[in-house]
Amino acid sequence: MSHSEASCLCGAVKIMATEINPKFTVCHCQSCRTWGGAPFFAVQCGTKVEFKGEESIKIYQSSPWASRGFCCECGTHLFYKVKKTGEYNMPVGLFSALKGLKMEMQYFSDARPSYYCFTNETQQMTTAEIMAYFAKEM
Image (cartoon, rainbow, N blue to C red):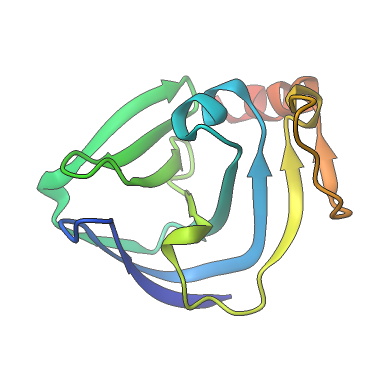
């Protein structure tokens, strides 16, 4: 685990995450692909995340188990937050100084469209596996 500082594109929101796991995940679900136009590459940041400029953060309740946050000034995607645990998953690209990054898991692997494919060997979870996991979380 490492820590890092980041900000949105316009600088209105500053982030300090103190427990970043460099083993990042990729989510292929339709919601993530619609949100960002591509799969969501995310580092797990736990609950120890601080924000400055919170008045510029817009939160969208994207599912029964999670919300997504973005800067309402520039639109930068800031986080995917699990409601039950309060844990943040944040775009890996926000933290440009992170070392030791490695893709560890691909979520909704069965929902990945045929127009892209990663060659990284990772664990993968299908839609059914994800839904069963989050059914326990609600």
